[in-house]
Length: 471
Image 1: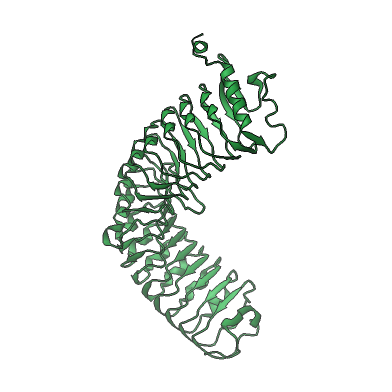
Image 2 (image 1 turned 60 degrees about the vertical axis):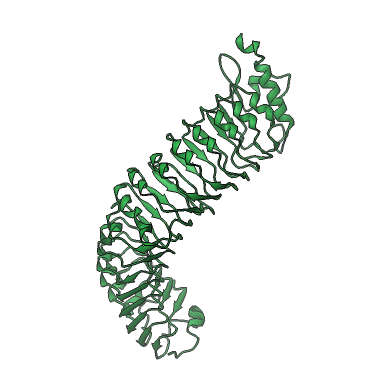
């Protein structure tokens, strides 16, 4: 047999696995007890052999609580198709001999304590479909040679200490469907060619989420990426999730939001989060042209100016709209009342003005409404009493006046109510139906007078109302 002529037999595999065993210890008793010279190789636990040649094709050791390092002899398992070492306590480096496994299609070393660089020799594993090295302590950068793995569909490198720039060769990975790169120290621009790869892109939070390149999601949160968001993402017609928060994707200037117009082509888009970047310029009217399937829109903590366009009411599927901590001005458009699916509306800490539109009461599913730290004026519309599920209502630090509508005090689900730092006058309304769930009430720094309603105990309101008369 030709393989035997080159010295590659099942004995080669047996020796390689015994070498591997010699470098690890087992927390679980007898996990590798079957790995011995007296037992047939193909009967060893975790080992699968080919039916014809009896060579090792699969090695499934995931979650075996192995401690130690990976023997370089692993590279002698030349018929190996699948290697799973995930969820162990394996340390040391990934031996470059892994690159000898030219038949390898699945490689999972996630959830270990591996250090060092990602070996460039992995580029020799040209048949790789899935590569998961996430949740380790790998350093260095993402080798540009990874770009030669043209069949790669799943690439998980997140939650490591990878640094440097994302190589332009990523644009060659045309088969990718899922990518996780988050919780790393990667930086630099998002390659323009990247958009060719994905129908969903995910680059999620360094803290907890993922860079899910599922080509229906794009997650690059807390990725330390810089440069503008490429308008080429608009070519990803099946894109559902774009999560790019916690980066440096803007330059505080007007061109930072051009990508929003391009994303109007992504008719399947469900989530768009670009909070905590340096995005500047006026909020474009194109935001109203985003997919009517959009459910979450988060632009929080940027430097976005201008006004909220009237046609924001076109986004009829929105459940969460977060525009807080920007430089937005002007009124909250009356069309906001068309967003009947909204659960969370946050425009706090801007420069908005005008009256609170009465149409907001049409959003009967609303649970959280944050309008605080703006310059809203006029009175609180009684239509807010239509809220059936409201938990948090924050309108503090505005220029609101008039009396506090007694209807507000009858929302039974209300838990947080902040009316502080306005110019409300008169008495605090009596509680016809006591707010049994109320946990926080702040009406400090208004022009209120009179006694507190008897149903409202001082223990409930804490220090915001410390006397029976307040001004």
